[in-house]
Amino acid sequence: MRLWNVWARCFIGLVIAKHGDIGTGLPALRGGLEQAGEVKFLPRFLLLLGELAVCLGEAGEVGVGLETIKEALARCEARDERWYFAELLRIRGELILLEKAPASGAAAEDHFHRSYD
Image 1 (cartoon, rainbow, N blue to C red):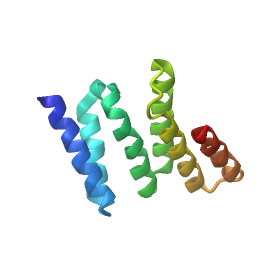
Image 2: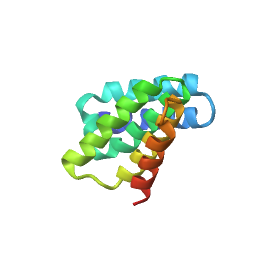
Image 3: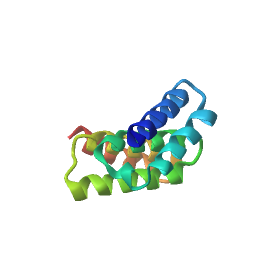
């Protein structure tokens, strides 16, 4: 039951963040994933890791969001978990655009094309 309780708390944090209260939702989502420990590497948590990266980008923590996506993509490739891979690539593209670095547009476009493929 503990696992499902943690999972539900993560989703509650995500819903709060998606409803515009990133200041409350992000810490709840992040805290839930930290509380999950190694369990967060189960497939059911993959969507939450992707959404955590989105929320981090919205909160101005783009670098942390990109690191979160990098880890999630690496896990997908290592375990051949492709069901959420395209969305993770899309999220990474969006985060790259938020960086506003030189050539970020081309790098983001590459991720969008990979996601589409």
